[in-house]
Amino acid sequence: MITPQAALMPPGGGTQELVNWLIPDWELVPKSVDDVTRLPSFASKLQECERVCQTPYAELPHEVQDALVLRRLQQMFHTVMLNPLWRERLEAAGVVRAPDSYEAWQQIPLSDKETQRDFFMDTRPGVVVPQDRGGFEVVASGGTSSGSPLEVIYSLRELRDTYAVAGRFMGDYQLSPYLTGTDPKWLLTTLADYQMWSSGTMVGGVLQSVPGVNYIGAGPVTAPVLEHIFSYRGPKALMGISAGIAILADLGANMNRRSRESFRVALYGSGVLPQRKRSELKALYPNLTILSYFAATQAETVGLQLSEDSPELAAVPGLHLVEIVDENGQWVAEGEEGELVVTRLHAHDAPLLRLKLGDRMIRRPRLDGPGLRTQQFEFAGRTGDVLHLNDSQYSAVRAYGALRDELKAAGVVDLDAVAHEIQFVNHREKKTITLYAAVDDVQGLSYRTDTMLGPYGLQRVLVNALPRSLSLFNGGEANAASIEKTGYGLRVEFVPRHSPDIERTHVGKVPLVRDRG
Image 1 (cartoon, helix red, strand yellow):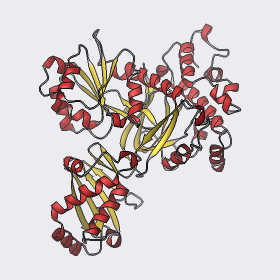
Image 2: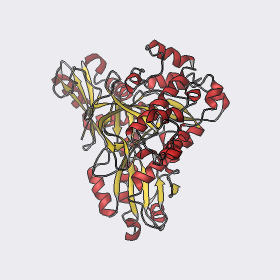
Image 3: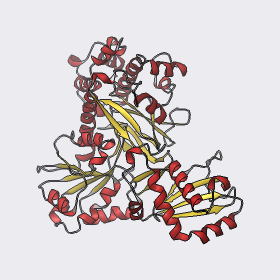
């Protein structure tokens, strides 16, 4: 039970009475598309909950948060049932009534990228409110796991709500310990304009909504531009992809000390930031804290690292339902690893239930106050078959096809004909991609490849093949010169069948990609 002031409390006084009052029955079950367009926003429910309980929503007991989110999920179920495609999907899975518990919620089938493509691309048959009514934004992803482009559609009014919820959380719980004092406070991003048709546009919306900061969408910066911005009076935080953060050690080399001391928080949003780069940044910027900002095209703020002392990411309460699930879609226990699944709670017009984002997470214990109460998880890697070269991502399926074609065209080997198994191993620290192929004639094929190509020939194969592995929306990202610039090299290793060099899962499957330090 919660005990806010009686004068502000709806009749009854219990948690369930509160959430039933916040989302009454006549809102819980919209009868038509027009009813959906008239529903009060979920953000307004969070605000009313705060008012009644006289506590920030993110600091309310888990009991209250869980009850309100479940009530919202029930409302989302009734909303999607107005759409024939969703109704058919749920009924086929045997889900015919709104979940009355989180256990029942886990019976709803998981959505994957194919579901997202079928429901929200082309004519977008999965939206509840038709797009011809206007008021939507389309966000595109390159589809790095599948090699195919991917789009999703959001209501602009609900995006503005989510930006406000996430921005307030960032300000209150992530940035406030570092952006202190009475001087103006600055929040920058170096995300490039060409990235703004993806998760970048959503991240920018969040950063602009952090209370009390001055926002600068700087884009890629040169040393003079960075020095100019850092000369502004007051503490700064900067968000970018990991390569954009790493390069700040070079860009700030000649910056005066006062400006360097004003850099307080670096937020990296993709890739891996090597320890060496962290050390260089901290040596140059003496007051710097480096934190992770975990986002996705479908979820503008999935998790935020709140302290360098812990790699755990904190979910933004009331923004998404974040689940870490096993292969059957059931929640894993604390300390166990599973797949990341997200449901946007602010989605009356175009709901997408239980979407797999393609990441592995370890479920960690909740933060339980005093103060912040929220879910925590730790990043454990990508589930998709993606090759990461610095901050660029390439479809491993397409990369293999391109490498196979290059090797065949050179008269070296037809991998499809000779390989029993293949696996890419990305040695990130060494900047080497090794393609392991399990074959019968190890010595003969190794000799033939070394004789005909050698290391320089293999490098030409790599730089010719990888640009062809990019999808439609990412096609301008790479060419042979940019691949060379990454410093990555290619090795082809022929090994015998069942070689321990090829990593297998506990059930004997061979993942296409493995990342190693």
